[in-house]
Image (cartoon, rainbow, N blue to C red; front, top):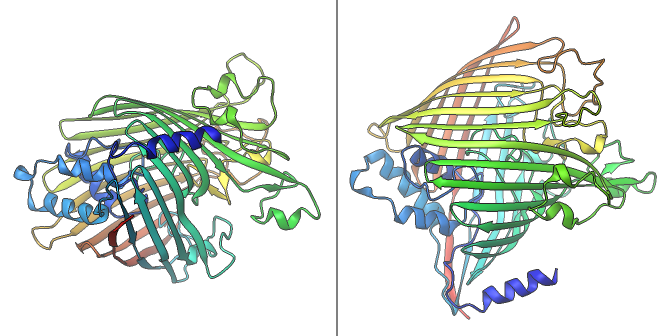
Length: 507
């Protein structure tokens, strides 16, 4: 770690060498929805549309470059909401910026699961998410942020494990970082999403709980390399996930698990980007920080199974494309695993595919999306190799399915500022396999996707969102699900409040 110390010292000793506002904009922040809408219209493309979270300063600089003379009322309202989210006191060479940002959300859902295409049960649930403590400070290239989030879903999650022992509370986000115009180093807990906000991702998504991690990024807007090394939950006796491995060690040994992910981005223009991504879960009784996995210039395919092999591993390779032309924005990803290069073994190729095409009009967006995940994707013969963190998928929560959707966003700011309506039609075909099930053999699995008894769901829904003021937002969704021969109503109502208090101090 000595290298990181000298790197940080060098950056801190360069007065005013870099811009301020290196605080991360949480991937769950409502501002991302408006950033995506503007990116579909050719604005804010200095920001990589498929790599979040952004830094506050990066968003602020992109906002400053937007020519507002030809923007309509709707687009100006979006800019206003984003500016509020990233407004921040500047910290000069002899001043530090500090702040406090409380937030609260309440949702009523007639399902135990928030995903209304896949409702579970019919109980009316109140899900709340409150930022009890959230403070940050910046000085020059250095930033630190800490918070405690209180959420009912931390304990009552039908898909994941309980992550909060006391008061439904969890420390997140919590990190320290240093940022230079061509180098970033962050250490702490926060979420990533390698894909367009609100769309599916095949390597890293915001579906999982935030993990403790080390993040390195080198490069600029045209070419960059990224490496992430995260600590995951251990597996008891290498077979069971309890989230409390330390309590179980008196009876059985535990297998420590880590996630390593690399990403290489090439953006020859602001309207075209191509990325190559890889990730691996490596594990073992004595596994720990691995320089081999952290190094972004190591290609896992040529490293992880060579000697010295100190850990078990399960790796994935993916490509991503983002392009925009004539009002149409296209985003696609393909992950593949178990492909046979040397003809060794007889494993079937597993894959995950996600793609979206959106056409932006003056006051509406029309889009279509497709997801397809094979039956064995994100699973492994070794239980500790499953692509999960506390039983939540690091990419997608499910496997063995095909899902397609057709939707339209209608922006009704001429009627009421901040009002949006989205009619949506979704088709889901779900096979019998699941990431959390025992890994099937080739004899057990006849179909690579949609295996066994396939359950088909059609959902027609209408979502209404209302964000009139920066500190107030609300939404509601109602729809009809037709699954097999059964019909049910699934809906939700949400309201949220957010504030941002900040100042600067002389040092």
